[in-house]
Image (cartoon, rainbow, N blue to C red; front, side, top):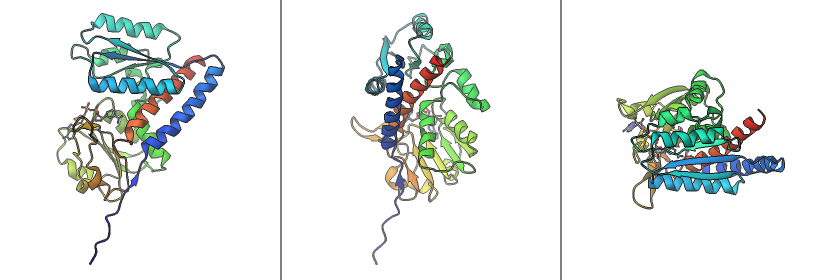
Length: 291
Ligand code: NAD
């Protein structure tokens, strides 16, 4: 007897959604430019981490394509606390700059929390300033929300996937992805389990999830038999297995036979992060010019 083909999850097409968001952002930038306002983003890169250089260049290219004034402030890996602080304060005080992004990771002699707190919260395009994170925690409105988790929420909403009342399991508790993701889901009335490297019984927890968000950095950690049939699977992970191949934190081929919806890697969350950065830049600009 022939076996029927395995069920296949629907793809959550982050690339297509990002293209749509970028087209919308470009229209807003065009309108602002007609009134003499040019949204401006500055990306600070310290040192020469290869992956950071790729991300920073990509962000600058997309910003330019949308008409955003963008530049990279490149500092040497041994830059002092004083110099980095002066650069940030200089950008804070420059009224022509609306958005500041400090590319992570920083070299080990520089604590990112210090510089995130030094950035003007109104220009904090990543939403990492303690005021912005505090507002997220309190259910208030931050000036900007962290780009990757905010992009993931936008993806769920674009596909009309309901969050309220669902059990969401977030794997990874970084300040950049996991923690803000958990809070954004909680704010939208999910029941949230936040897992990390010391979590015991991870597969059994993931099996309970209606929504899984994997933000770990371990290639294909989440296996197909961890996924509840029909679940929504968002794979934030970007892992290079060799020079050319990117894989996520989820074993895609296994998981897509069980899940209801799944993001591919590449082409899922990655493009949405950059598109959200552009949206945040323009939103900060609008907030500043409108006072
Ligand atoms: P991180 O290293 O700061 O945090 C990883 C988290 O995973 C930690 O909280 C750790 O406790 C947890 N963890 C590690 N091993 C685990 C295990 N075996 N089981 C359960 N939890 C475990 O990483 P990050 O900055 O949050 O990034 C996570 C992944 O997402 C990376 O692959 C990164 O490249 C990717 N990322 C992608 C985007 C995007 O735009 N798609 C943006 C940011 C990060």
